[in-house]
Image (tube, rainbow, N blue to C red; front, side, top):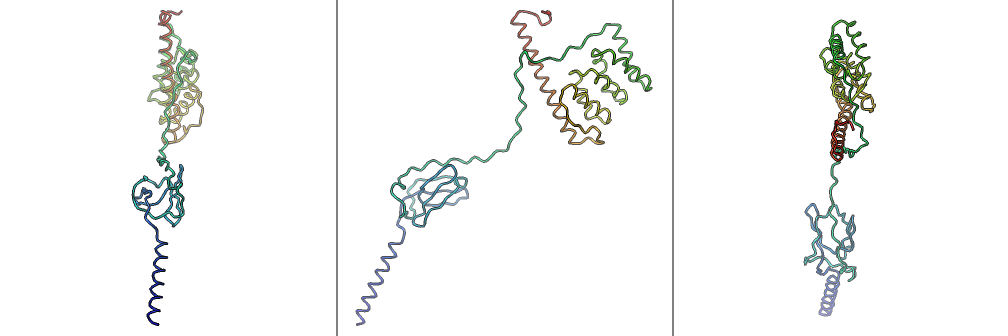
Length: 282
């Protein structure tokens, strides 16, 4: 009787081992996914698109892996767990290449693009010339403009303003004077006949210590450029905001100078093609 019980025990043990062996995964050639953190995952790729891939992990199921975490994929002879629930067509399906993930790059400010110079660009009007006698008179008024007495400056300012744009070259040096009262009078004259030749004086005055010089310079650059905007001319200290506000006028002046130079060269080329001189007046 005891021998029969021993035989029944041996048979039960063999059946249990066979059952457990059927449940264990069998070796299978598959794919190796290498992650950016250095980890490796063995399995079988079932699907992949531009954002993620689906990996079969033997009989344990599937998992989705974002492409952003994948460094590379190896199709090799490594032994992986059995994918008992996957079909032969899934195993033979070609694996699409991994789309490289390009990290977003920091946006940079695009450079200022200049339009192509053509005959539509208008050069600044040429300043009229004064006669010899008028030049001497204007020089005398400019000297009076720099006097300490307010009456002399006021009278000279009124007379110079009546001359018109021709007085600009004579007044510009005074608009850079260290004597603020004379500088203010000169800027008021330039304001009455805004011209591109006065842009440098206007840009310099934007950062002047005297608040009224800053204000008149701001008004002058607005009248010349046509680009209006608020400006912290009344601030007691030169601030970063004021420098930022004046930057757009500096950029405009640089752009205009390039355009004017391109247009000047274009005009010279046209004269050369016609066999004429730039000063022929034809």
